[in-house]
Length: 298
Image (cartoon, rainbow, N blue to C red; front, side, top):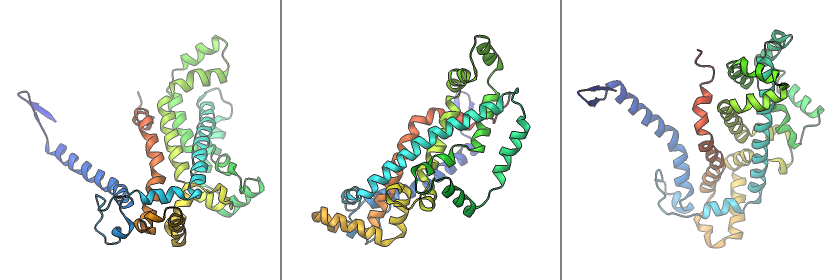
């Protein structure tokens, strides 16, 4: 955007950018908004079609029916605990490893770097991994959600890129004052790394919340079912949605005509996505700065 005689002049490039951004926003937001509109519409009326932007016959019966299912509450608790504990512990362990790799005095650092990099490209496969999980006693345990994901090579590289840019004089001054490595890490490095920590924490939390494969493969108890596995079963298994509708018809018979399996699926999708959407605004101010770590060198 240029100015001429004090008046702003919008370039064609800016206009095209605005149009493309609006189109991209619509493409990304419409599926979620479509689910919200459908979930707020009466079930029998929804079958007539034509619900795209606004509910035609507004009702909250679908959400009442979803929350009447006790399974979703247990799944919420499991996913919340998994996301919070898994993200915090993974950030701590990965940041500790990255801090060690960022220190020039670390012995055999090149050897460690090669070993870590190999894990990014080679793996044993699903069956050997399942056998390992079983032999470690993690199968059908809540810790199967936490321990295998404690370390991420990619996140370690991002952390290390940030830690390397922290002036070495700060660390040397702390050592002169008698601080050990743990004091330096927790009292100097961590407070200076809020941006990258927030970005990695958000990515990790979203990954934990959206994950269903580990729950499907490494647990068999319904008490360890995550919210995403619950949603998968509701969407793909018609009997699961029908069972939810049956529970609702027994507990809220006056609203039984306002729900059907399809609108229950949409309501379950919205309920599943809503908590993680609430986390983003609190980390937004750090997010943009965090994702740019390592992109600019001075």
